[in-house]
Length: 77
Image (cartoon, rainbow, N blue to C red):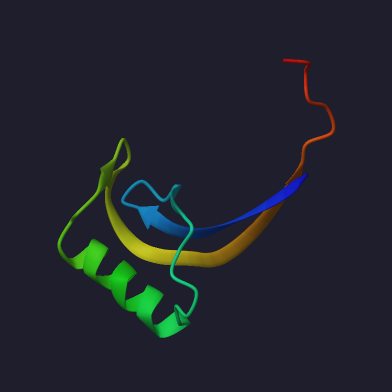
């Protein structure tokens, strides 16, 4: 049986210039790019998250990813 999961992947740049990814499983269906960008701006402005390379300083990328998993084998019970 196949199952599909959607993830929201937000990529930031930190003070060291490296990418930092925050992934949320099963985001709300009707999210807009503007809402996600506003949330990312808030995360940056309020320093909600930090990384080993320092604070998050810029938005780098936003992706909605659909992952389908096909279970090909079920062990006997």
